[in-house]
Each structure stands twice: as structure tokens, then as C-alpha cells.
Image (tube, rainbow, N blue to C red; front, side, top):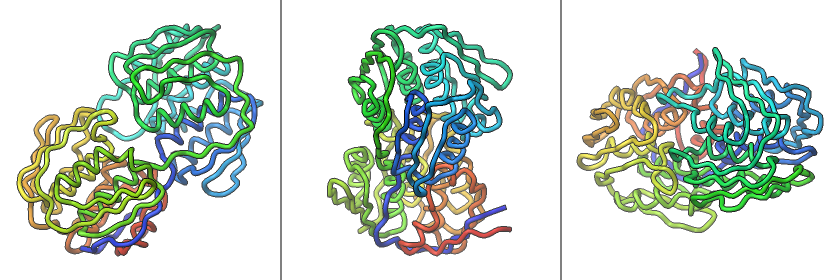
Length: 419
């Protein structure tokens, strides 16, 4: 069993380079299945989810060449099967994007039920609703999803809830459908826009990504023969912004789109932190104990649920009583029990958590319960007095590239060891 051993406290100082966005990459890679050609994707994050997804694409018949650890050339001209490897697709949530892409390209696909972090009920009913309105039949069996369509035809689809995954998946299924598809009440997250930009680069006709309504005019095929760069990861950037405040540090975060970070920037400034926006980089530094704050997670452009646990580390030692209301995932507060082991005073009541700020955190053995909780525990370990051991690293490796190396470069005393 691997663990991270962190000795703190350490004020993090220096420069951090942000990797490509996990959430974009995990949708863009399946989207390549819609292309009857070859394309190159760069700025891919070198994380376990990307590596598994590339294996799945190869099993379906794609030919992948790794040009370097962050760039691939992918040839999807000769797909050989409509059955994705069930053992691999069940390992992470984003495998459901294979459904929309393969319905569009081949009219059929079978995948394992999506896995990923345990964040409570995560239904895919909105995905299925969209596929069926486009003309597909979807059967959910024991551990598998089978979707099939003789022909997909554009239509109007209203999303009952704002869902990033369903927005992207229905968009994928609509690219090669006959006629026009209009999707209303869609997600506006940066990675929705990124996937639309990628598909348009390859010959799709998508309009309105980033607004409440997306319009897709079906095309006969996507041509490929282009290179696309994945946008920087807003959640990784936000993680390091909060690490700067939690650790009483000073960080310059490079290769980020600062506009994507506006909800977090506003909260950091409200709490007394310092932020300098340089357009493609952002500097964040600590000057005084953060003041209390109230947070409610919301779809973009609201405060992201994927930064909730990292913000929780800051609030654990803030001055006063803070409240986080989690409106996206019901089990997002599992990390609070681990922070309480480190001396935090957090009381979870349903979808809310009350943080009574303490003077400091202390090192302890803690367990990553999901991807973002794992990142939060690293931030807590760097900020805490003494030795923190973080377990269940497989969650963290799913979404952060070389995370201990990045923390080490900005001063953290952190190492990965085998027990």
C-alpha cells in the first residue's frame, strides 16, 4: 500500500504549472470516436483516468501513439467492436461518454456501469432521456448499459437538472444525427465549452456552448486532421490557490484561465486573502488569518463542488464559524471526519457542514475518500503541525498529475512511500 508522508507546517512558496483539465480530457478522448480520421491532442494530464481511457479506446480499435507524456495522436478510422471492456469502463465515471460517441458513430455500444468516486446517488437518467429522444433504445442491465439506434434524429431536449455529464453526452450523440438538436437548461462549465470547441475544430457545427442553450446542426462526418490543446485545469489551479492560503504561503500559478476561477477568487478576497490576476497566471498569498465565510456549491459560474473540500481545509482554521452548503453531491462531506482527526471542529448536518475555526491542525493518519478529498488532505497535511500520512492514493492519482512532485517544488516536505 502506498501512502504520502507529509511533515508540516510549511508555507508553500514559488511557481506551479497547471496541467490540462481532467474533466475536459475525459470527454474529449471519447469524442475522438466520432472522427473518421486522425487527430492529435496535447496538454493531456498524465493521470490514471486518462491512461485507462486510452486503453479502452485501443480495445475498441483506435490506434494511439504517445508523442510524449502529455500528447497523443489517435487514429479512429477502423473501430473493431461496439462492446467496451466492462472491467475498465466500470473503473471511472466518465466512461459514460463512450455511449454518446459510439451511438453517434456506430449506432450501438455496451459499457459497464460507470464507477468513480463515491459521492452518493449519481443517476444517469438525463443522459438516457436525451439518447431516447434522439431515437436510441437504452437498456440498463446488471452492471451494464446497452444502447442502440437505427438512426439518430435531431430534436429538442430540455434537461430537468443542470448536468455537465448529460450535457456533453447528448452533445456527442447529436453531432452526426440528422437535422438540428437543441438542448436547453444545459451546463455551462469550461469543459463543456472545451469539448464543443474540440468537436468544432474537427468539423462539427455546435453553437451556444457556455450559454443556457446549445444548438447542434448534424453533419455527415468529422474529418480530424487537426491538433487540439486541452484547456488548463481550473480545479487543479483552485487547489493550489487554496493551498497558498491554508499554508500561509505565496504562490504564482501559471498556465490557467483566470476567468474560470472568478467564484473562488471572490471568496479568497472576501476572506482576506490576496489575489493578483495576470490573465494567464494568478498569484495568491496569505497576509492574515482568513475570516469566516459561507459557501454554497453551484453549477458554473457558481462555486465549484470540486473545490469544496479544499476550501474546507481553509475554513477549518479560519477566524469564526463558517458554513458550507453542498447542493451538488450528497456525500461530499466524507473528508470532514478525516479533518476532525487532525484537530478540526466540523459538524455535518445533512447537506451542510459547520466549521468552527481552530488555531491549527495537527498531523494524523488520514484516508482519501474521493479524488478532491485526497487533494484537500494533502493541503491539510502541508498546513498541519507534525506528520500526516495520507492513504488511498489511487483516488488522488485519478485526477492530479505528479501531485507530490508539484508540492515538493514549492517547498512541501512530502514523499510517497510503500508500506
